[in-house]
Image (tube, rainbow, N blue to C red; front, top):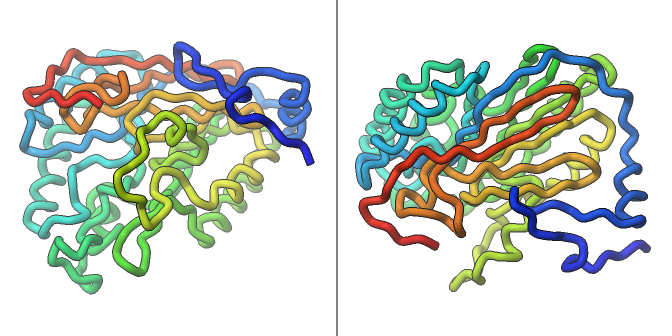
Length: 316
């Protein structure tokens, strides 16, 4: 069995985390059975994740600032990486409705076509403290569906296939975990199998499929009951990706800028529009969003900040 010393396998770079080369890693990287890449037209998009919009902390003003900057970037569309509001999980319906109204009103500032990815905070009433019941008409993911659309889907743009995943698993004890459920896995396999052979693919997910976040986060005071920082069954998705030309996976949830390359695929976590939940920077990542350029079967991304200053800084 091939074993790797993880500390020697991951190195810090200016853009986040990246796997370093070695003969053993090259052998692994060549393992995926991918067809030759089809040509496509170049384009750019913006990836905005973890807005956590709320009436407090001038979060609506911060989102407005981010949207104004994003709309002045030459981009074809925007992908939202989840956690549009803060927070639908544990509040009553009136508060959840008000949060979504603030988001929709503020998002008009963006003026770009927008695609939405569900985040954990975009699920209504899951925590018992919300007072909501599973029988309520907006309970759980119905809140997102009614306001922002489908939970998972795909579309094509200029010869690139873009997949938006639902990475939120609502547990029986009314909490959440990172999970791509069986029905979605089946849909994903069929969706990718129907593509022209060699078509480049970009993926959006809220909870990361691949991340090293736990390696540099301080140990939590209380161990979480559920696997919530990454997708617990990511291995099922990654095995599928090995057979297709996935050129980039964009992720949210941890509020840091990070890149991990696995089997030749960059898994890029996009920071957060809200930074440290509107309290300043998060492990050195300020409030911002990604600008992604797609050309020649590859992606390049850069992180753009927008000059927001917290009224209550509590930097991590």
